[in-house]
Length: 110
Image (cartoon, rainbow, N blue to C red; front, side, top):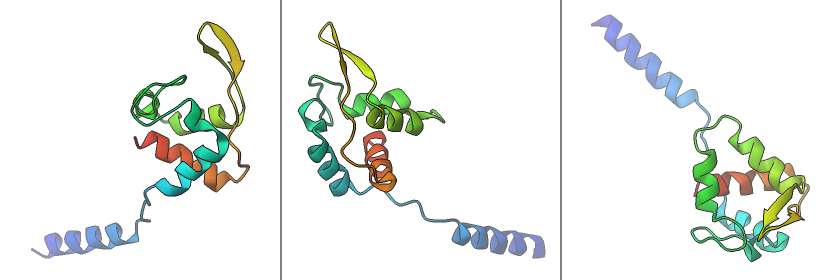
């Protein structure tokens, strides 16, 4: 009986000590996307010139390097193929790592 109580107290203390994982700030993510021109080619659920964010999220879901890959994609202007031609993907309009991380996490949460 004492062991069960001790385990319960230990588990509760551990759960309380874990840092809270905050959800991405959707308003801030959308604002940065609009400022960066992302919404010209992307939307949440419909393909435009670029893939829907839901497709991007599905592609990287569960992958350990998913967030890093999307971050590189939106910050390093890689070459992309669109309509049979190749062009440079426009970089996000912020150098603030926190803003970029929030936007990437929001995309991956779709």
